Amino acid sequence: MSTPFASATPEPSPTPAPLRVHVSGAVNQPAVYRLPRGSIVLDAIDAAGGPADDANLDGINLALEVADQQKVYVPREGEASQPVPAASSAVQGGAGSGGLVNINTASLGELDTLPRIGPVTGQRIIDHRAANGPFERIEDIQNVSGIGPATFEGMRDLITVGP
Image (cartoon, rainbow, N blue to C red; front, top):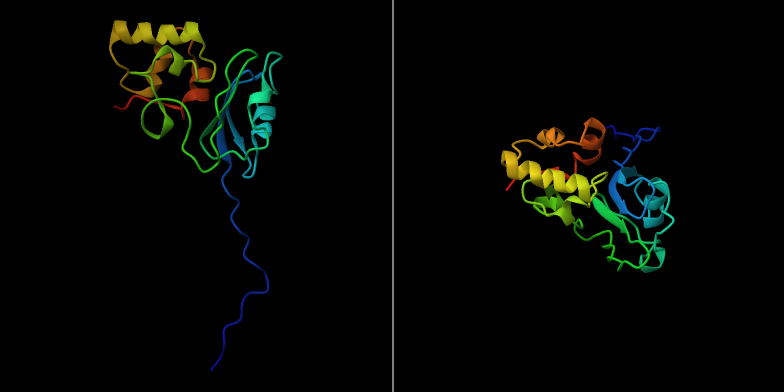
């Protein structure tokens, strides 16, 4: 009876999918970034172009490992810092299921957490909702003045129109 032998060449292990981390607040380029597994908060901030001049890094743990779909918020000087959840905890921020921001029900503050959406554009979203009713698809947010394809692509994985 013959015994099967293991292959002399090991099978390559699949490369783990990168983490998707939303970096916002006092950073130079807030957006959603793909980072390698094992990345820490400092890596996420660096990916976002580094801290802005008015960033307050003292209130956040720069050495904390980030998790997939986590939000990292960098407070500004004089602003209270928000705790960054541990890698095993749920997604921070946003309303709705899975940490997504529901663009049909989100407050101005929740809309402001989205990349490239400040208070002016956030108010335009709210005004558009009031004038035209709820968005039927997430792509419909591009009908709001100031939100083009590039801005939409930066937020498409962070928004929903669901209940």
